[in-house]
Every structure is written in structure tokens, then in C-alpha cells.
Image (tube, rainbow, N blue to C red):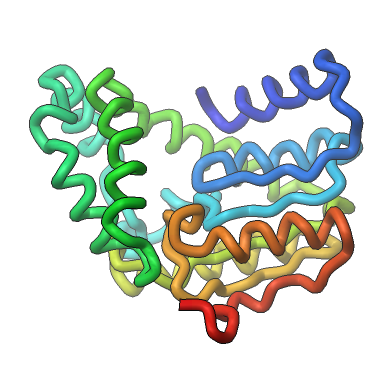
Length: 232
């Protein structure tokens, strides 16, 4: 589904399941786009939003060399071919573990990476790849929406990963620029660069995610992004 569909589905769930509003919404990666759309369309649903290294809404705009995925159409074709062949079987769980360890922060151990890789392995073995086109469409929908959006009343914290080993330095800096643009869309938007945090921040910096959520629940200080003293 696109970010647009995810936004509408979540609003319908909140509306029809009797969930007490407003809620604290936590979004990661691609669902950062749907979270942004939710703040634009249904601000009354939300008490606050925590964005975990969200996908930049300008992901596919500008020069190709500054994009994490310069040629999405070609990648879509390749991914669909790999899915048809059984991507998980071709790559294998151990390769996923090594990729996670290489591209995550220093606090992720092999046991955590292995457990997480198993969930990814199950997904891609069942042909869960080849959906990149939804990502392209989602970026276009969200980019158009923010161009006409008034300053958003929902408070937000954007947790931006500083461990960006999987992309070029140019693409990493563009991501941080876009995350600052996320924050600027909100009347109370806070951009936080997360030390030792990667895109897999749920693995390497769950502490800062919890602190960000609790800011909206009990009013504790907005996290600084630093690793707590004495925390290995």
C-alpha cells in the first residue's frame, strides 16, 4: 500500500475501534510518510508523533547522485525478478545478519541481528520484495501534500540516524536536510540527531525511542540524541 492508503487505514482503525484519542503515533522509515499525511489530514487523532529515521519525502527528487536509490524503476524490475526466484533463498539469513551488523550502530549484537534477520527472511521468502514502486508513489503523494500544508499543530520529534553506512555521504546529508524539513513543518517540531543510531534504531537505540514517546506521555525532556553516560 501507499502512504496515502496507510494513513486512511489507520484513521479508520482509530475511528472504528473505539480507541481513545488523541494517541501518540510512532512511525519508522516509509511509515514516516503516512504519519506526516496523518498529521496533515487528521490532527485531532494525535497527541504527538515520533518519527524514527523517516523516509525523506523528497527521496526521488533532485540529482540522481544524491538519492539513496538513483534509479528506482530498474531496482523494481530487479527486485521483482529476485522475488520470483525466491530472494530469501538466494541471499540467505546469514547474509542478512552480516548486513544488519555492518549497517547498524555499535550496540547491536549478533543475537539481536539474527532474530531480526529471521523476521526479514520470512518476509522476503514469501515474495515481500518488489514493492518499491509503492515507496516512489508515497514520496510523490507526500511531497505534494506538504507543499500546501499549513504549519502543523501536532507536536513531533524526528529521530534522525547518524549511522548511515548503507548510503553515500551525499545521500546521508540530504536525508538529514529533509529530516530538518520534517521538523520545520510542525509548530513544535524537534529534529534530533541520534548518536550510534542507525536506520534500524529499534535495535540499536530503543532507549531514545522510549524517551521520545514518554515526552508526550509524562512530559519528560526531549531526548538529545546522545548515548546515556555509563550505557555501553
